[in-house]
Each structure stands twice: as C-alpha cells, then as structure tokens.
Length: 83
Figure 1 (tube, rainbow, N blue to C red):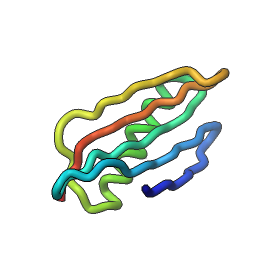
Figure 2 (tube, rainbow, N blue to C red):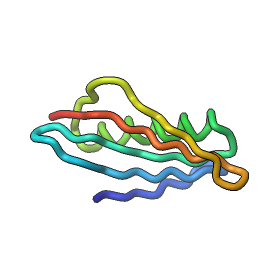
Figure 3 (tube, rainbow, N blue to C red):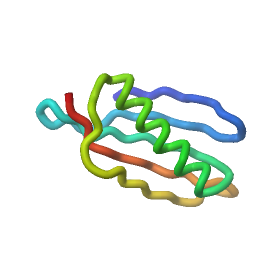
C-alpha cells in the first residue's frame, strides 16, 4: 500500500493505493479540509495526481464520501483506473 502525505494550506491529503483487479486497480485518495467543499476538492485532486503518477487511465465516475472529524471534514474519493 502506497501512502504519501501532502501538506497544504490548512489541509492534509493522504493518498492511498488499493485493490488490484487484473490490469485495473481501484485507486483511493482522501483529503481533509475546513469545509466539505475543500475536502472534496483535495481528495479528487489527490486521486487524479495518484492516477497520473501511476501512468494509469481513469475509468468511470469518481465516488466520494465525506464525514466530519472534529471541526474539519474528511472525504474519501475512489475511482477505477487501468493501464
């Protein structure tokens, strides 16, 4: 499992690679921000960056789920990507 921590302005992004299925993978990335919109943006941008860095091509829609953590919000975005 690959984990990269990126510090931004008042936010934290955590990138994670997940389940493999043949030549395709389900890629997951999370982002934490002060608002739901910021956390969603961070998680989807982190997902796009991770997919590009792995030289994969995204397939299908991005699924994003968010949950509150204290005064911040954490969002997890996932998408299937293939070679």
